[in-house]
Every structure is written in structure tokens, then in C-alpha cells.
Amino acid sequence: MKSIAELKALRDQMQAKMNVRDSEDGSIRVVVGMATCGIAAGARPVLNAFVEEINKRGLKNVTVTQTGCLGVCRLEPMVEVMMPGEEKVTYVKLTAEMVPTIVASHLVNKQVVKEYTIGAAE
Image (cartoon, rainbow, N blue to C red; front, side, top):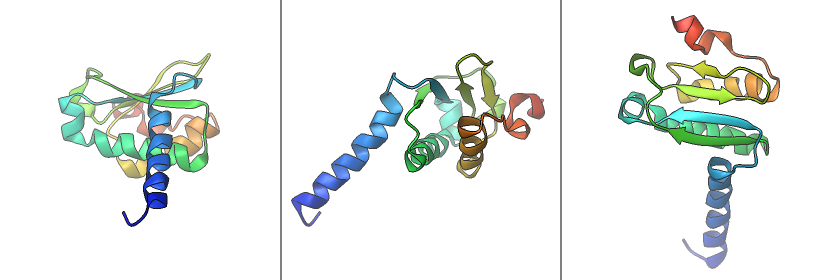
């Protein structure tokens, strides 16, 4: 840091990221499995990618949170997307590179990315 302005800009940037992760106001919930199995399989980059992509698109109606084990360790990293009035969708074996597709298709355009879901994996 070379100046107070740089420090304030960094604070504002991090605060915006935390608001996406912690807000209870959103109507769409994205829950990332962050138990030991999920973290070992790469869940942290997936969580970060969701936060970054949602911030980049300026989506205000989406909350990103984390939870423990989602129950099928062999399919980690796993993410559940819960939209009002719709069934929960579980995405499996995710990578950070898959996240922009999920955000654009599912969160923005309401089209499930079926090839990434638990049904396609099973």
C-alpha cells in the first residue's frame, strides 16, 4: 500500500465481496459444500469464483454461503442453487472454470446447466 486511497479502495472491494457472501436479502441462494472433503476437492476456488462472477455481473438478488458436507463426497466440489418457487439444483464435480456458465445460464437466465448436475453425474 502506498496511500490511504489505495487502502480504502481495497477495503471497499473486500467489503463488497463479503456482502455477497453474507447477505440474507437475496432471493437466490448458492450454497457451496466446504467440509474437508469439499475443500480437498477444490471447493474454495469454486466459492471464490461464484463470489467474483456475481460481483462482476452486479447481481444483487444472490447470496453465496458455505455449508458442511453435502453428503456425496465422491462428487465434490458440490454446490446447491436454490431459487424461489423451484426445486433445489445440485451441481457436482465443479471447477472454477464452470462457474461463469452456471451464473449466466442458471442464475441470470433461469436455465439449469444439466450436464453439471448430480443427475447427469449419476
